[in-house]
Image 1 (cartoon, helix red, strand yellow):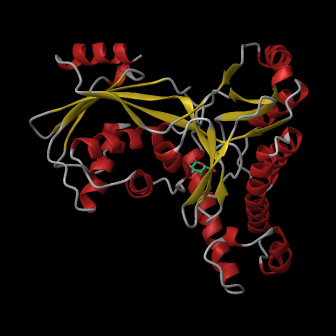
Image 2 (cartoon, rainbow, N blue to C red; image 1 turned 180 degrees about the vertical axis):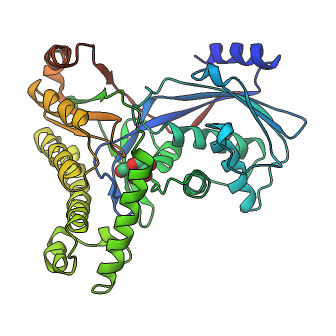
Amino acid sequence: MFKEISTIFNDKFGSFPEATYFSPGRVNIIGEHTDYNGGQVLPFCINLGISGAVRFRADNIVNIYSVNFPKLDTISFNIDRLDYDVSLEFANYAAGMILELGKRGFLINQGFNLVVASDLPVGGGLSSSAAFLVLVGKILIDKFSLPIDNIELAKIARAVENNHIGVMCGIMDQFVIANGVAGSAMRLHTDTLAYEFIPIKSEDFIFVLVNSNTTRKLTESKYNERQAETRQLLGILQKHVPIDNICDLSPADYRSYERYVSDLTLKRRFLHLVNENHRVGSASFAIMENDISSLGGLLNESHESLRDLYQVSSPLLDRLVVLAREAGSLGSRMIGGGFGGSTLNVVAKKSLHRFINSFTELYRKEFNADPIINLIEIVDGVRKIND
Ligand code: GLA
């Protein structure tokens, strides 16, 4: 892949790149929609992601070419004009990164040529936008020796999503992509940004991803709608209890405070958040104790809650979860923002082949096509591959 990307770079820009980077996608084991409510999450970086080859220029022009979107050809902008512009497509993320760095006093005064190639499945909901943002940020930090660590990088990348792209996401994706380590999940407390690594070294189970292959048209608007609902809910709760975040409350607190929430939809969101946040702790212990059936059970509960209480699943995701359970997964759920994307399945290693065969058969029968299954590896976060 890296040789290839250098050759493509040379074909496009007439010279070889000065550096190559890799920025991974992410999977979250549990703790969904908690990251913009001050709760916990349990993500890790996966071996699928975005490779980027770069060479800086002597002028102010940024040229970006994605191997995955050849029809868009090379997208160009001037670093003096960084406003959001629909015609810039995904390059808006790069413009936004330069803009947010500038706001913090880090002026980028040199353009660059960049070729990116992603092996993240389209519509897989594995955070390609965060991977791209962190990739561009890392390239700029390295080139200009900016005094920005990977925690700050994650904050800046999130600010680009919130301020420039208009997605009011939490910090989970950017944070794990910037700071993840191979072989471990990261238990991140999004209120304080404290985190610890939980090694996934079990010989007994494996995480299997199934891609629904549905692009997520609704995602951004529905996502922002959920964010607005939880902001409203927080406002209601704060009249009765001194909290900064909804996830400061436990499932037991829910019973004390739900009476103040008359709107049924907000009540549902509330119940999901307190339980889901609690499940992150339980899942962390289950992993540490190698209790895979409890881990599977927690994934199942999480899915039911995302489907019925937070209402971010889709009929297709629900079917994928049902089929995976029929095929013998120990637990299955949709992951990420929802309305499309992937499902995560905990499968006992000893029954992996049986799972894949019977899931494939069930899927073919229902959808008349082959499923997209990925056995993922847990890898390090963003990194430079070579100079
Ligand atoms: C998307 C967002 C994250 C997080 C998840 C849901 O991936 O980018 O910040 O909110 O959805 O857990």
